[in-house]
Image 1 (cartoon, helix red, strand yellow):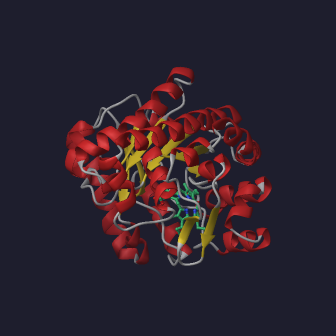
Image 2 (tube, rainbow, N blue to C red):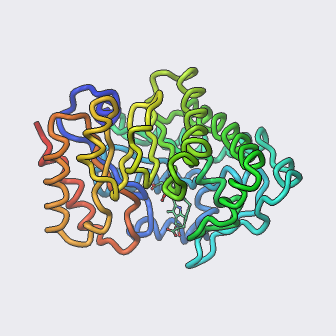
Amino acid sequence: MIFINACLKKPTPYTPVWMMRQAGRYLPEYMRVRSAAGDFLSLCKDYKKASEVTIQPVEILGVDAAILFSDILVVPLEMGMDLRFEKGEGPVFSNPIKTAENLDALDVEKAVENLSYVYDTIGLTRQNLSADKALIGFCGAPWTIATYMIEGGGTKTYAVCKKLLYTNPEFLHQILAKVADALTLYVKRQIRAGVNAVQIFDSWAGALEDSAYMEFGWRYIMRIVDSVKAEFPDIPLIVFPKGISGYLDQISGNFEVLGVDWSTPLELAKAKLSPRYVLQGNMEPTRLYDKKAIETGVERILQTMKGAPHIFNLGHGILPDVPVENAKYFIKLVQEKSAR
Ligand code: CP3
């Protein structure tokens, strides 16, 4: 698998490429399957349909890896929280965590069992996916998941979480530790079910100042990484802490690949962290609106990473109104321009 070889710094015939959120609303094929399933969460729980949309971008765009179709929030859902996806509003938990009793009511073991539809999706996908394409499993980072559990949904200010961080840090640590325990078991189950690599998404890392992030964010990712590595040393781990370009110096750990978001200059990430880590990223996702913008973006990134270990990706998820034709053009361009 070209993608896995790249994770392990082995030579590859070209730079492998995939896109965050590559299975999604910009694909008419995805919209058809989602509407047959009813809604987004029903699609996640229907392993046959979830597997079908996982494979779509590989067949339609020719990306080098499939990413499991699911969501980071199915973990708190299956721990016992009530999750809805509201149109235009994003995810909503109707009973956010406020008290120790709320937290005690969440069940780690039950969640890991209830997530069997994810393991079934992985098993079926690995069966149907061509053998040279990697299947990436994933989870959210404890900090990013906890922001939704505590705020009850998306937030611009993170005021509820941050208030907790400064007024009752022990309770925030308890929440993060419990979520990290669930995620550790969950990732191990994904690996046993057949994923070839795992990405940990910390989309809201940049909401915290550096010292707070290292204590409440990064530390819990490393807890998962160290436990998974001890059991599965050969499975590449990718971490994606979005928005931390100011303190890349503090980033280290037992993982192979660092996902670089689009707001972090790739030159800077390279200077600080390459070749110790394979860098993944980081084209600005909105460049996909225009072919010329794709060309200049791809050229610059390939030039920057020439000779250094690299996996091509967007610097965050693809947006729903990107023309499929442009996404195809992007993938093909990376594969052709990087051929060696
Ligand atoms: O990347 C992939 O193709 C795999 C599937 C995937 C989804 N969500 C599907 C999804 C992955 C890896 C995620 C991760 C995820 N989910 C993150 C971390 C990555 C990131 O984007 O920063 C976060 C923060 C979430 C939480 C979440 N889920 C939000 C905020 C939303 C709503 C935003 C939106 O775009 O509407 C979701 C819903 C969601 N997850 C959709 C998809 C395809 C849209 C649902 C739909 O079909 O309407």
